[in-house]
Structures are given as structure tokens and as C-alpha cells.
Image 1 (tube, rainbow, N blue to C red):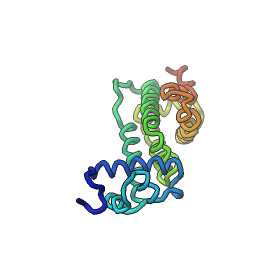
Image 2 (image 1 turned 135 degrees about the vertical axis):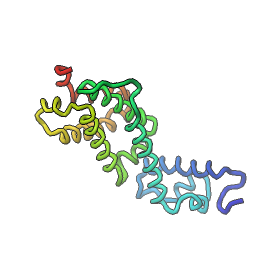
Image 3 (image 1 turned 45 degrees about the vertical axis):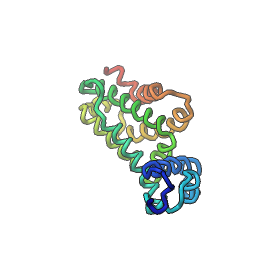
Image 4 (image 1 turned 30 degrees about the vertical axis):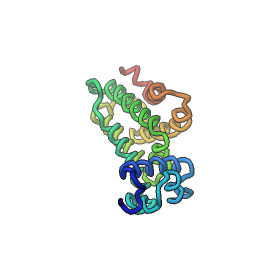
Length: 199
């Protein structure tokens, strides 16, 4: 029997329990108010079991951030279900699909998203990546000239969009006031209503 592991327990299950309980505790109490002893108590394992899988609380927290970022990147880099045309119409269609997928991921992982998208030190990097990916989509669809009708820098527009998303995720999505599809449509309508004249 491995040192620190409960009798007849599966090692992977112990690790998974530690991760699950850590997500709950970090999300509810915050990083600084969560202790390793809280996590092992909630997971019903011993402290040595914790150290079989994680060097420290920081290492566990970083694992959770990596888990969120991995899911986030998978969502943002996934190919659309159907072929999206080039130009402004294609960009707006793809943007709505990406937002919907991201919102579904957040709804399915609310506590992990709270850590990875809002509270961790790395959360600003996630939002920077999101901004960069959306700007990349604009240029990929060759619609940057079309968006000049807004008379605002594209980066400013997309930064505002990401900031709005952050706020609306908290106030509407996680509060279950709007469904993922509704919120994705709301954001597209809010930022790209002028494109309806072009489309």
C-alpha cells in the first residue's frame, strides 16, 4: 500500500477528489482562505495523500488553472460545425458560435471558471488570449475594413466586448438570468448591430 493512500482506494480517484474539493473551496472561500488541511478534510483523505499528487497548494491551484485554460483553448480553437463564409457575415456568425460554446463551457464548469476566468493571477492572460483570438478572427475573415464604420480602433472594440462578456457572465449567465445562446446573441447584437446594414 502506497504511503498516505487510503486502504483499497484508487489513486486516481483520490487525486480527482482532491481536485473536485479544491475547486469548491477555492471558488467559495478564495485562494488565501483555503488551506491544504481544508482540502484533505473535504476530500476525506490524509495530508500525505495530498503530497503524493501535489507539491503544494500553489501547484494544485496551478493545475486547476491549467485545466480551465485547456478547456477554454479547446473551445476557442474548435472548428465550426458548418462552413462559415468569409467576410463580415462569416465573422459575426462564427463569433456567436464561439461565444455560445464558451458560455456552455462556463455553465458546465461554474466553479472552475470562477477560478480560471475571474480570480486567479492568470485570468488576465486568459482574457488577453481571448481578445487576441477574436482580433485574429476579424483579420482571418478579412472584415477589418467593414468594421471601420464604427469609427473606433478594433482592439478597443474587442477589449470592450471581452470586458462586457466578463460582466455579463457574472450578472446574467452564472445568475441564470440568460441562457448561453441568448447571451451570445445579445452580445453580438450589442456590438455588431450596424453590421446588419452591411449583411
